[in-house]
Image 1: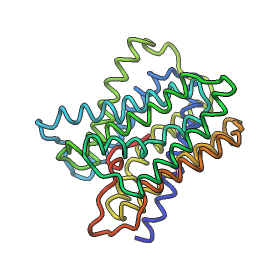
Image 2: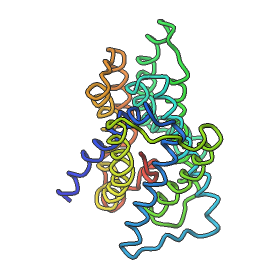
Image 3: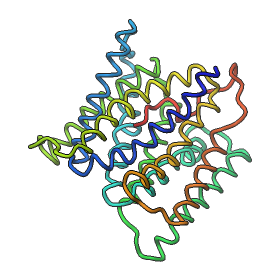
Image 4: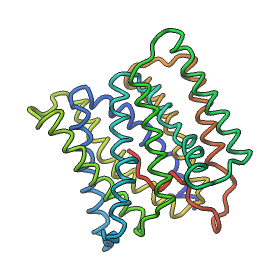
Length: 303
């Protein structure tokens, strides 16, 4: 267990650095092309890894519709909205607003799953609301509202919808297999979007930074991080595993500062602290390895 715990900050590092990596890719690669190629390459890597272990990629036919709907919200809509968010808003604010996901999960779980909102969740919702106010009020006062900020919030909402649907309608397959098919579905749907909105790529990227960022995005942030996530979930209590996702917006902000030269305002930093605190309150608790359940959002591959 002690060695597995070391994978938790590594996961947060990979997913967090994926935010500035995606922004660097978007300098030369269209959002639809980036996601289509990224999903395709990552799905091949994870599928090859599963087959090399002698495991099956089969999913019961009666669950194909569930797989499609969950993948549509949790993979396709999440990643496209987060990509478009970074085209018209800072990576710092996009990363923070996207990781309001646990807050929306609490609200949707009450509506769809009839889960009670206990004191811990009430505190989490209050902290999350305060974080959104901290981020949004200075922007409203300055008249700097943009579509990017809306896309960032909606990316977290779409991730939450897919997560709650997976909890309501579970798929009888291993998490790794579910992740593989979601990546493959993402490749197909974003590939169609690429053909419709951007067409076939006319030239390869020319900047070395674009190639390095894309390589990181596909291999480490998508394929490797997905494998790490499910390894952690299989060996550690869910509460400890959740810490990996809480590190992501913080690492994303630091990465945006170091790699993109962004300078977060005090409002950005206050929103970051409050929203991470909100997510921690909702997700992390003293967990029993024998009885604790996987967090609602844990079964979806992120990248």
